[in-house]
Image (tube, rainbow, N blue to C red; front, side, top):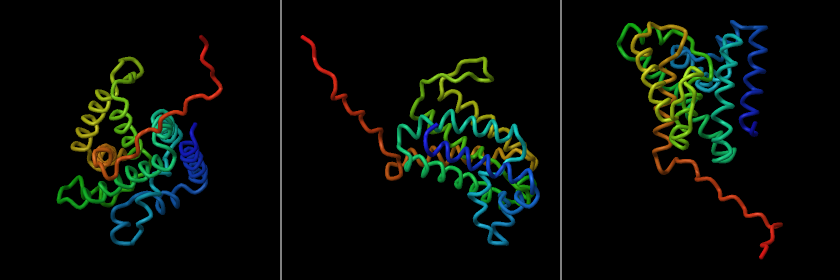
Length: 211
């Protein structure tokens, strides 16, 4: 694992262990609740919700995805640019949740009082970046069907959209998934904010030409 990916995984595991001891308190204080952000000033929840997970499978799949997609991105961009991008898509996904929760619909009203936890929003942002930068790499959909990265992201985006439209304030924050995809696309397509291109690899100096 690269430096930032390792730090993200360790931080999530540490918070998860603490959650096993004091689950209600940690989820209430650090999970993302639009109502708490807007009425109680708990702005930190826009970032801390990324490190709170509900069960072993929740954190396992999220951290596996951070490792799978984050390592390549950090190696390409460098640690500082990768951390900035991870923060932008994670917090951006949380902001999308808050904004959507203010819309005058029954489902969004339930979202306003619900608590969102997990790194899925940031993970979807990593997935978007990975598909933009490595569009022709192959991913096994459901571990069986080989798809190119760009097709895989398109399918995941359609699934997230249909689930978000049809969700009734459930525990899976499909709106955060969509937010991570959208913010990641916006960030990478904006030249001012685009991460730097990969640095050219230095040529080895210990090799000699043989005639």
